[in-house]
Amino acid sequence: MTNSSVTPIRWNHQELILLDQRILPATESYVTCRDAESVAGAIRDMVVRGAPAIGISAAYGVVLAARAHSGSHPGALEPHFKVLAESRPTAVNLFWALDRMKKRLEELGSVDVQALEQEAIAIHQEDLQANLHMGELGADLIAESGKGNILTHCNTGSLATGGYGTALGVIRSANKRGLVEKVFADETRPWLQGARLTAWELCQDEIPVHLIADSAAAHVMKTCGVTWVVVGADRITANGDVANKIGTYSLAVLARQHGVKFMVAAPSSTIDFNLSSGKDIPIEERTEQELKSLQGVTIAPEGARAFNPVFDVTPAHLIDAIVTERGVVQAPDLDGMAVLRSSS
Image (cartoon, rainbow, N blue to C red):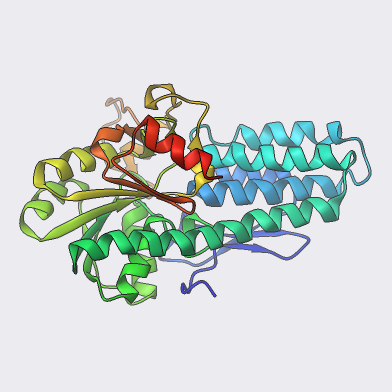
């Protein structure tokens, strides 16, 4: 039971079936992956996106690769691990999931398809349970401010996770408690994940949503009674800095200016304790054409260049709370994050 009507990742023991998020909400279509290379392509091409969902998909990609090498030495899967790891550079869940699958493979000593499949399924199920718990912890924080309006960015729901969602999971849990008047969803250029995906998920679950242009966020915070900004994360460093979809940093600055609380909800697998701060996070840059066009229609002159970073880093001092399944870190810093790490 996920309390969400959306199921974007399906595993049938032979194939990985992914809801194609590039063409939502106009069309609900699925892409079937039968090997690690097709999973890597689906991650790279944004069929599946969202840090937890990327990690889960990569784990199943390892299982698909294993089917062609059953009983072989673990080294036989190394090229497949490499192609999966190269699919996206910023979301740490990808590397966390691959490392976990590799560790299990090394424990087995040979390619055991059934055991690797069990590990991938466990990663998927654990993410869902983590999301459900995070939802309640985040809703507890929102309850302290009382019923109000929430602003969110990008997509952090069932489409981006193993089910229920991180930031959107918090919103779902808060809504069940009667704490949400309405949700303001940033459109999230250039892929419009807020417009196409978050608004769609909220409509599916009958949660009131108002779509806004990214540039309207300051005005909305000033005039529309926003009490919390709730976002997800693609990587969190040891000091509490957060990499997330481009535009998150500006929301944090605006929230501080307007006295709005700022929450990050993410599973502990998103925390990279090997990186001391956000300056160490690699920031993915995608093609100019993604910014110069809108769903295949060119919107900029041919001679104009484009700079298209797809993530930014929000410094810890602008964040009121980081919510994980292990617990909540308020006013995150090195000490608070270290306490969270020791709770594992």
